[in-house]
Image: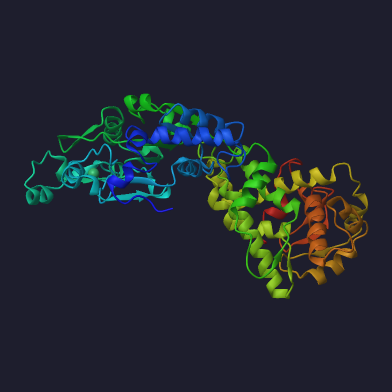
Length: 495
Ligand SMILES: [Zn+2]
């Protein structure tokens, strides 16, 4: 289909004056949303876990033609949702060609376009924007100025054109006017200076702004959406009241409610489809990685106000796969199967995502990270092995058995030693793993059982990843139920 190229052609097309003259962005979003709702199916494909909570509220906000704000901690897909709004825009939006603020050909707001149309009439050139081009995003920081966001008076433009300084012809437009007839998203709204918030409010409310004291008429057509950390947003004085008052809906986001939702998000977001090796991430490894984030979100050593981003399990998964990949390359194995040892090796992808409280700072990020992994392993182990008798395995270690399983150990060799542990391999049926599975799969599963027993303190493990008997009698007076125990108080991280 070829799009009309002049105003005259446009009038005779489906982009008729009757249809477009008063159709504002929020009408367009609403119309297209209504159509999507009638069709059924997901409104925002790829947004996982919000179907019954956040999505219906966003739908209501769009149907209400509201400007709205998403309130949530970091890593709750706020920017992603805002970006997804552009899928509700028309595939092509006509505007007066050459206009910096993408004027509606039937009701241009800038003088240039009005002059242009008066001069050329139906032969005025028309151009188009895609939905992607109509979405503008800005991360608010305290140093954002009115000039950045709204515009500045350009004295040179004024002098050259012989305009008054207060004429709109002299304005060098900022981001907001350039987003005219589109969606403008501001992330972390409370970080915006009060003066700028007032500027935004004026645009929303009055359609005019003051730039360097000159009032400029700018009846823009924009869907304004925002995101913020809930505590910052509700803190007194962070948001100027008239602006807050103009934000129609306040929508709270949240972290995945269940482990399975978390796994689905991580599986979607993490870079796992890599060239080269066949990859098989066991369910229990996925669960452990997800449970690290869940454990961190409830750990009192981790700062609640900043939250624990979903990017933690995503980066962790990528690092876990890489560590397994590295091992596979080294041993020339064709199948990449991550192990729990790889999760411990993925510490660099975990510690940076945790904002620690004082107590956590005292213990150190690595220590907190290892504790979280261990908690995650223990909980995951329980989902697979609750009520399973593992006495025989524990006994093997109690009788002096030892096995070293560095994360770099090749599968064939490791499997050989693991088979020597009485009662171990037959337990893997709980993980749907049997003697006919690839060695990589069997080793990972068996190691998970040992890590699970270790996480429950049934057996011991030192820094060199040697599994041994558990500590039956405390060597020195130790609080028996403290989560961290002797092997963790190491000279160096052992993974
Ligand atoms: Zn214009």
